[in-house]
Length: 211
Image 1 (cartoon, one colour):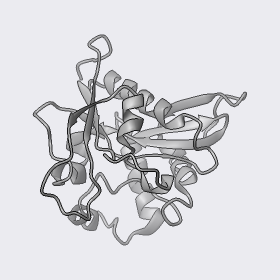
Image 2 (tube, rainbow, N blue to C red):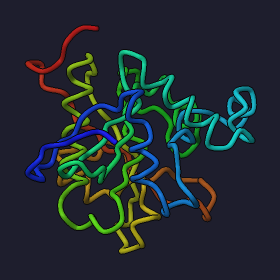
Image 3 (tube, rainbow, N blue to C red):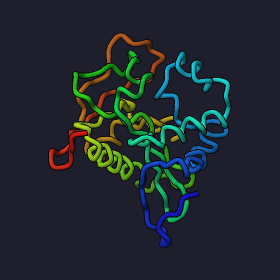
Image 4 (tube, helix red, strand yellow):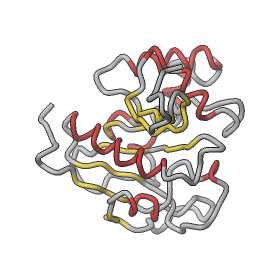
């Protein structure tokens, strides 16, 4: 487990290969035993190609560690002191195949946006403002790696639900973090699908850096 600030201060930093198990700590008990947050990144066919559909924790952990070795980490971990308390996925839209190809989240335009597909706060640590803090940290991280803007596709209805079922966030959450709506609910999708909107935050030019 990675060490955070000794006084319990909140720290948020990119996931590294040495600390991939902290992701499992955060998501334990949320979706089954744990979640390695690979669903937004690969289509079903791509998961089968990589053996992720039947490989279990060992294979999924290895894939997250591989992603964490790249220049851009697959996400950021939040720590309260030494305790992992939150996770937020972040990456170029082109890296998130399921997001990029989904009818629920089509591209708004040709801007090479980065995307926040998932955010979760550990049980027992919710309701403390951690989600907004992580969103802001993710935007800063993407900006340093050259992102022109960051998007998310949260729930449109803002209904109060169990936090386990709002892992892609709500419109109000992202609005609190400085995002604005750039597209409303898409018409014609199956009624059983969660209504989602597209939120975007442009990266200030002073933060953006050419990759």
